[in-house]
Length: 256
Image (tube, rainbow, N blue to C red):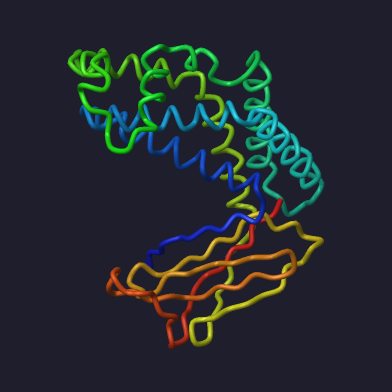
């Protein structure tokens, strides 16, 4: 069975923000699980970046709007006989649950975490080039000398206010990614272009490349069309070049 690498291109700012948050949540989970001093530092960095997102914009409102929009669109599908009604009902129930969780949050997401003194100090020192050294922040050095289990408990507590947001964003992206079937396409001489149907409201493009392939896609999209250039770069010190041969790939145009 062929295995694929998947490259994604968001087509609006909302999905771009959700993908960035997803990456931060995944980064946090990975480093929390491993738990070394350095893993703890990166887990904290991930929390601080998520906190920046929730402070600079009303991400809770954006996520709620998208959940409600998806719920409305999916409800309409329930009238179609070819739809798996049990699966659809499960998805709708999950969306409704995530909406309820977010609506139950008073004020900004992560306000409790924002008030943690150690995290505030780390955020202030993070603007200095290079890693935070012991002499920059002895309080961090002291915290890192605590037992691993105690540090893990602290980090999980600091992330806890973002848990509902994490699950809501993941659900939105899961629904979106499974909203369309992929098609087999060919990029002639490494180039592919296709118009966008403005009535379809495509939100996300997914390009799947066999893992044994030698090229990667550079995707650019406008309001009316998108294009994909397949590039090759065996030496990262050199400028990439467009593949000269035809490239077979799978395309998914996600819309809901």
